[in-house]
Length: 150
Image 1 (tube, rainbow, N blue to C red):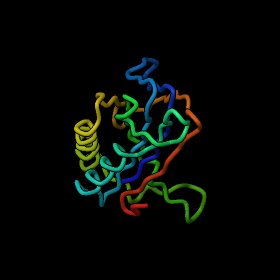
Image 2: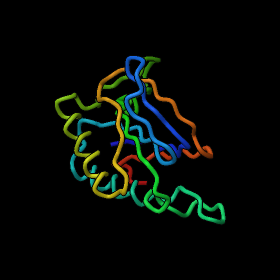
Image 3: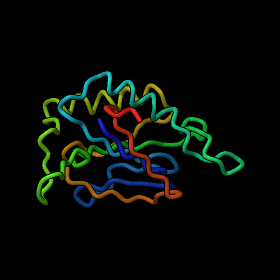
Image 4: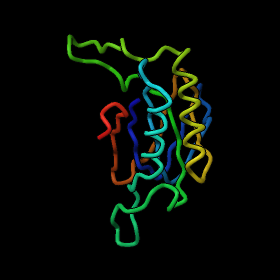
């Protein structure tokens, strides 16, 4: 499981020219699910995300987590995070989880994260063509892969 986390001032997701979800200050999380991902990947990742200290304290030092600033979170499914580009110029998505596996893991990820944070998780729509509007605050962008655990 792989995520790209962006600290945002605000973000919204539009599907078919309609805004379906939006957040203010917090995290925009792009989530990629691989065919080998399990509940253990979810558990490790949501704990890491909920405790990630990427928000500034009163001294402008990144020392606070999303709960400590009463921040919001939006999760967007993004299979392209698992693109393989080693050969050729067209990315391969051979290891990306198929929808029958990915959708339940996506929902479990959201539910597990909801248990660890104060505000309800906002989402896009799995598999939909989405337009994401965001203002990256900082900019702060963090990559985390549950298989690498770094």
